Image 1 (cartoon, one colour):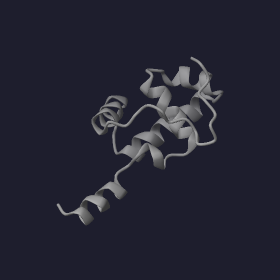
Image 2 (tube, rainbow, N blue to C red):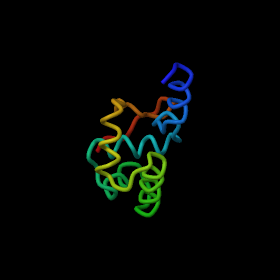
Image 3 (cartoon, rainbow, N blue to C red):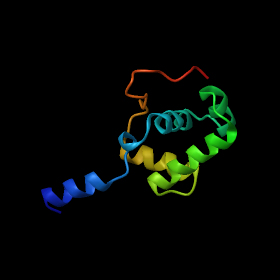
Image 4 (cartoon, rainbow, N blue to C red):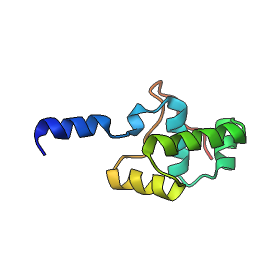
Length: 93
């Protein structure tokens, strides 16, 4: 593939950088091994909202399970530092 084609593929590739701050926080919690219930408590969300966020992450990355999501993140070598751009940090578990 040529340089232009590589750039196009890269631009179309789902990336954590393209997520909203809240989805990045949810993804960070998932990569730390938190359950949906733990994520909800940690981020001050309802379990329903947390489940909706996890489902949105599956859609964004084109996967159907947590295992597939974590495998895709790992294969791409994306770091786990997905704190919101406003500098706020994840609450401690």
